[in-house]
Image 1 (tube, rainbow, N blue to C red):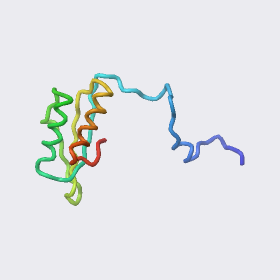
Image 2: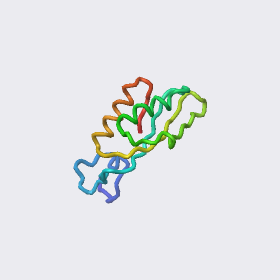
Image 3: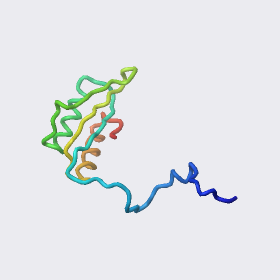
Image 4: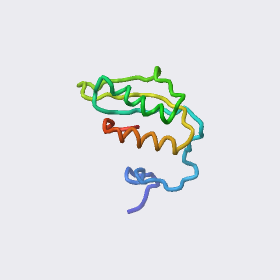
Length: 105
């Protein structure tokens, strides 16, 4: 079968390894994070407690909490001043380690 030169759906799903043109994050930067977990009165506070250990300048007053349609889950949206990729990785690991966080985006 001849190729028409167009990328197929399958082609576009393939990861691009070591692509120098891929966007990199320049640190320091404002880094938005969304944390999803079971809805609870203290969920946002628990998330903020972990975040402040990795980003001491974090302003908890900027946090936005959104309940899911059925009220079972909450998402906590926040922005940190990220200083390195390692900082972000450690933060994600510590958030998941709480046992209350389902997803960090």
